Amino acid sequence: MICSRAASLVVIFASGLIAASAPFTRASAAEEAADLDPVIRRFSSIQRKGLGTSRLSRELAPRHIKAWREAAAQGDPDAQFLYGQCLLLGAAVDEAPEEAAKWFDEASRRGHALAMIRLAWCFQEGSGVAKSDVRAFELLRDASARGDSRAMNELFVCYNYGRGVTQDDPTAQMWLARSHDLGCELGTANLGWCHLLGIGMERNAGRGVDLLKVAAEAGAPFAMRHLGACYEDGVGVSMDLPRAVAWYRKAADAGDVESSARLGICHLAGFGVPRDPEKGIGLIRKAAEEGNPFAMAHLGHAYIDGSGVDRDPSKAEEWLTKAARRDDPYGAYWLGMYHERGLGGSRDMAEARAWYQKSADLGLGWGKARIEAMAEAETEASERFLLGPRGRGGDAGARLRRSAAALRREAESDAQDAAARAVRDFSNGSINPLP
Figure 1 (tube, helix red, strand yellow):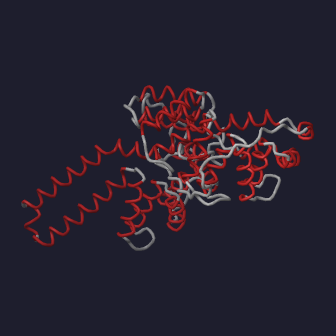
Figure 2 (cartoon, helix red, strand yellow):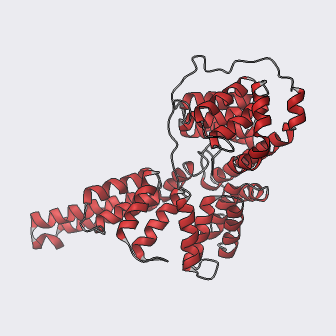
Figure 3 (tube, one colour):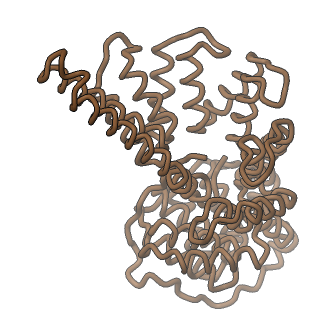
């Protein structure tokens, strides 16, 4: 499994702590306009499952935004969070990320955990505020101290990556365990991945799959998607392509865009379902147009080999470049292949090597193996030039063959570590995504 890295951020609050405010007593006008408690519970449940909250915000905003705005002005932290959501997303109001961040900050100062998590996302993404990993970490730490299980999962991410804080595997696992114990479905899914791939603990694939099942059955799309991947690849369970397709479909129905792309790949190739290239490429294209880097990479590759579409090198380069620039390792690898083969008209080995290196840095073993193969070919060509035809069968040739075999063994032995590194950057690094 692959993925992307989140951006780094800048401190704008000198103290780094959220100042406490006086408790809020809900105004009668706001009480008459809308009961916010059930709405907040819905948002909290969605966040624990790792779902984006934009769909719910857009569903409720047209009916309630006036009441939320009035209650927010009166100091209600629930309303401040909800009105901030509308401003951030442009739901029933013009999009205004800076104003949204101010309302999240107001609610955060009143101890509103959901607002703290959302404001942390703003700092991480630089949405309405200057980027600051440190400030994002502080907000998540404060929300966790108030017992929010989703914030604890995000603290796991911070310590796991060293984002805003020194990287610390034991502390990362401590916060992840707490998130799981308090019933955060996304925390349970991430704990499953750690067991599955041995991230911060001894590898236990069976336990990992069991935890993914628990989270998937509780409605976490992240877990559904990766449980589908386990059945597709036979990791921790026997390979079962129809079951993989079923989990991808459930995740897609729950709004997980990448699962739609994976379902499309299954239709495109006939994995677990009858082969249907038109349906498959349609699902992949839709996910790519919605901004999913994994889908962009696979749409670009489809234009290279003509799977479900006519071959088109220019469109291949366009989609692969979009994916690679969004840190998708497959996109980077295939873009390297595009330049190495000269699919755009001329070969560019330097550009190819740069993209292969990026894919390797993102955890994809293919990139490392391809760089080594290119180096081996260049060395062999150099030896052949220096030694002449007789050198091909001599000691130099034998050394080259032994070196190539050693490199292949090294690449194979690194495969599991590369997969583990990739998973660290796959989905669980995003704070409250905005699908």
